[in-house]
Image 1 (tube, rainbow, N blue to C red):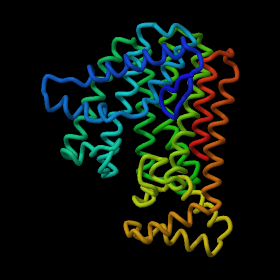
Image 2 (cartoon, rainbow, N blue to C red):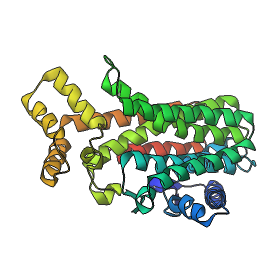
Image 3 (cartoon, one colour):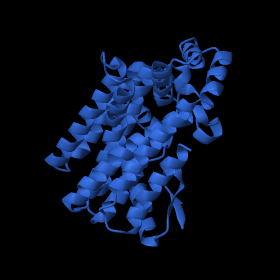
Image 4 (cartoon, one colour):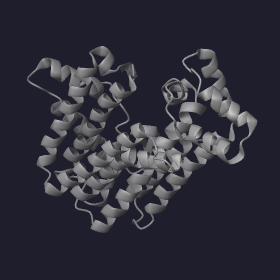
Length: 336
């Protein structure tokens, strides 16, 4: 039994392990090749986050989904490179919008250089992803374009906020389906599709990826409050400090609307204050950690994870399916 990929996924079948490891190694080579430029500065900026590492969650899903067809089919690895390049490009842009200073343990591109370099480098990665995608056929181009539209729409909806009368939690879940679920779904879809898997299998894995992607992000929301820095790999309460309304905070505000409890109102007022103040931030974090809203957000994450598990039911029993199930367990474990 060998551990591969994010979350310590354990692969018990040696042939599957070999396929996954070889596939991920090929993806890593493909990422480095795709981020080379005749201009050394562009290469340095484009490879900045590639070399910083990362979970490679999406390429792992491509490799596992490809097991339901021919995992050695020529389009499998390039499609994984496309998905990861797209993900990396969004990180460059996200860091500019969020004014982030650190990404994957290294200074973000906007801090190391400036916002213009970060935005243009993200654009460069999108262009390289499109170049590779062109060789995978018009259907792949269409699928990626639709996912990219959903991703951008999700980001815009997050920036705009819910329209009048719209439930903020429903709005937030729609945002996550676009921002995160869409690309995770494409990873599963490409893996199955490029391997020549049956269309019903492709559909099942696409649905699985969509739900898993949302569960993954909701688990991150819980971790941002509940974990220590060793567990999560980032400073606890980062989203809280930046005023990003993640699900635990939205569940708290929902509870205020429903029950109007004085202690909940006081906590909302604290969250609305200047949380760049370390003392206020620490108090907000400690109070949220023991609040029922955090447990509600945890249950939401588990619900999406269980929906991902249920989506896999039609697939035949095999080691790849067992590994996909284990990824669901890992997401649930992250959410506690």
